[in-house]
Length: 458
Image 1 (tube, rainbow, N blue to C red):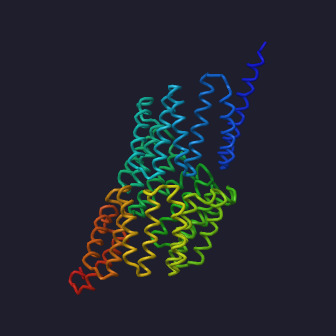
Image 2: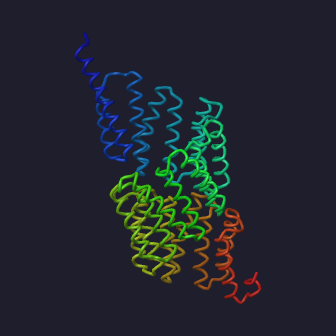
């Protein structure tokens, strides 16, 4: 006959597993706060269980790693670090290499959040080493790490290296999966994103259409992954100035999102944000603000007041106000964005640099040139430390500093900045990117202002 203590222990174990399963359901339903509550309750019960079997340690591991994932999703790096460390201790205790590799993947993900891309690459590489010890044939689990490494290279502006990793991933997938597997569609999509960043718009659309062809064949016409691809194609059309075609793609995506997702899902907020970007590009500023405000309300309801995705919308609204010459309103929006980004992301995050850039734009427009240069240099310092010397975003900052020096009639300094910008743009984007023409035009205007008409003409 089972002892009362043994029966109680089994009952506690069942309660913990039940709470864990409820947490999983909540997490899959995007109710992360409820999931966190269930995981916490499950952990409290697990602490009172005397059972030291692998089964309980497995449960602990899964709870720890899932809590880490929730914190990563909400940009809470400190909490994520705490729980990935606990998960790693469990994985090492269980002597399960696959779980150790998963922990290094999470550690890398946290470093990506913090803008520590070199650290992220190091942890992803450790994960690959461990996975290759398990499967020397570079299976699908290894290919996932190539995806992650490619994404880091993308964020560093190392687009050729990103494409190289994505193509390694694609090679593994094509040999291991059916050619119409949705995971292959995702890889085509990522290659397209890297091509778009390089200004290779036709190549990007080609990759997106390959992705879409697979998705439509496997998922039907009304799946959120298809909506995501319409967003990607729309982003290319926006970059090409094909605004009506971009709006058409964004509306298609929004129609799908609205039919398959809750009204307050983050993807719907993203679609409204993208539509706002188009209206902003078209100079339809009131429409842009309207779209941004719908996106903002959804993100506030999902993430709360202090999430980076909320800060992004404040920043975008600031961009619109800046374009409308509503400089006080623009500065207010940028400051709201900065007040979220600094404490959540830290002082050396690329998003913080982006906001400094926006504030610099306002100062430049107001004729506060020294203040503008100060903000641009704060932005540049972060970008150089995070992205290195050869990223398109750094070229933009050099360009902006050049504009200020031009406004101050400091023509030699302006030309110096434009040349720095041009050098980076040519090496990262190639000679045919539209942004190259902008820099040449500005240089020509400066030479013209100096009376150097031959150099202006060249």
